[in-house]
Length: 520
Image 1 (cartoon, rainbow, N blue to C red):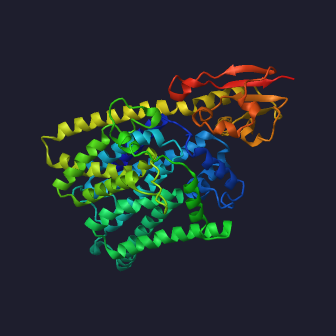
Image 2: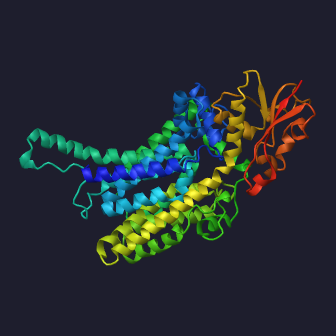
């Protein structure tokens, strides 16, 4: 790389890191705890998939890196959050390099800045959402593909790859070695493209829908069959490796597929048809607590950018944009199992196609900046305003999302400050117990009351955290699964030690967690 590119990349990565750390959410309330639990099992030398019915455990792309972090740092929420954070930085780098390769430095800067300021990524890039890692796999696959199949951009005189040596300046040995490496470079990069597509499946089975993003590219760009074959080889290698791991762990090659079908038939997912249009296109009276305000006007602008790509006859940006729209259409109306169950609609899934969106914006805006000098100051000014707007939305959404785990952090802090003995047991529900254990770095002796339904009489000593999580109030059936003494009013020998005052927002208005000590 030339120093100019290195300097720009360094500035962009520092900006990305700073914005993510300032708006750090930490471990979220989706499947984050499940990934940590499975990672802990794997770090202890056991198989999290041996039962054959543990869908998060099969997602080795999430579990294996977290297991490594657990081995090094123990039960540490900051360490676990570093995994998606590092992936976000890598994605930012890959977006820059890919856009620079295809369209020049201007497009690369625009695409990278959009990734940095994208509200959805500000919110989720420190949470254990598989879609964050999907974004990295997509960016890596695009990077390896385009670096293999395209020459360096003619619009940028600087090159990101070493120039070829001239025959007059190289001896025969040098020429022979260069020719060998040059021939080897293409298949190796294409195989790596396939490898990262396979790793996307390792991370989360939703990645299979990425084929929809690729279809317009295959139709409009028509890549060489030879290139596709190398990619398929890399992809199948990763798939075979996973099948082998599953076979050794469970005794069957198809255990993961069976688990997916069984799990999707049980889990009640979000299938509200109004959810996606509302969250993508709503710009007034947004409610971040319910995953609104994660986009602002970005999708309206993406409509305009897609049309401009068509008018300018920019085939590659148009193919990428159409892939995004086709994928969104499937997320809105598609199915997720052979029975025709509508696909789950969660806004975090969209992180997977955000790198492609950023590349399309970079290509079109970079093109306009290059060939329209009069509009250049206006476009730059409007783009800066867009970045400020998006960053503000992301920061606002982060402040609201943190409400979901604030109570758990306060409970853990209070209990840790009590300096309890090892035999002092703390009783609370499953949802709260996992977060309190995490935030206390495993220093507290916590018993989940979900496992004590057989226990008809309350414990005679220890501590009880009541009204500890929102699921007790949002899910009417959940309290029925707990011991009656836990959901009943406090007994006379329960001494109230502390009340955790929550935020006056949504369901959190209805309860405040309370910590009791059981007196003799």
